[in-house]
Length: 129
Image (cartoon, one colour):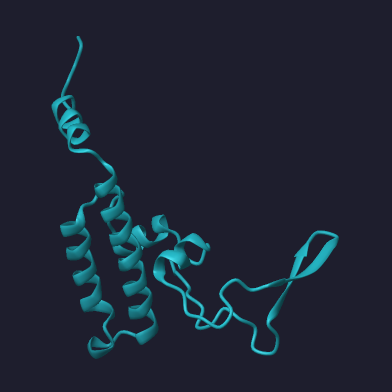
């Protein structure tokens, strides 16, 4: 069972510096997210929730397009919505994972040139022997 946890706040309540322990070395480091909320893209890059885990929560493969992601999100949202008996926290986790996966899908589609897509489609069933 997968659970993606997003902290309500990333700053310790009593101090602005975080105690970081690296083996025998201990030092204090300022929290990079102190005093501000973070976007889902920042949460994914900071390790709070990675895109692979979010895709497994939605039940979509890495190659899924926007329509498949949206469909999977809506199906899962029906189960997790607070008005349907789900918890508000799990629904918020689902929403953030949806944003992460959708933004990743959009960025990979924008980064691919049209000729590369056509070439992959043309050679998908190619066999030399």
